[in-house]
Length: 233
Image 1 (cartoon, rainbow, N blue to C red):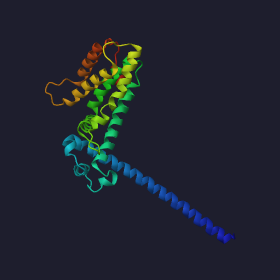
Image 2: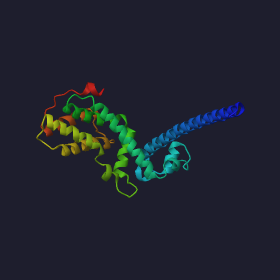
Image 3: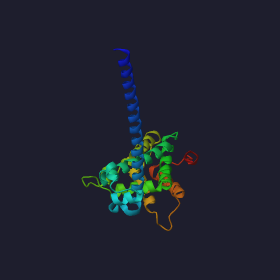
Image 4: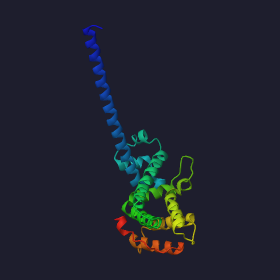
């Protein structure tokens, strides 16, 4: 290869590298934009679910809430069912991350139990929109086959609690109730409080939390012997 051809080859090769880098940069920018758009749509879906309920939520209403064209949503989420499923998974993951992060600070299984109860109620108050939207999906949503979500995912948020209760049983023992039954009771009490939002005489969640912990301790046969407040704050 003579010097002229060598120079042309190097020029073409350099040009190709530049073009490749430009394309990579564009692809990265497009990916970021797509992720931001998806987040915008999911946020709008969260608010729409709270305001309209699952049955009355539509892609058109979500688009209006997001202030975008309704024709744009199917580009990211082809159907309402797919959008709601992505939202359900994202909301559940956010809740789990919060609760797991608090529980991880505990030193004993019993501490983990008390922190779980406190963290669950705290999350429902501090992240009310996300929590309410998740409950709306679980109790009123259906998958593409028409199966209610609560029949598919109803126990997803009890798995950690069951493991905690099993650990408490191994270490401290509690003769009053088995872990699965107690997990259902505790999560039922937590959900019952959050769903009673409009009750005129509703307790503040901190008082309710204290009373729930006392009740669980009494029913399960172990005494409350742990101060959890500093860990949660």
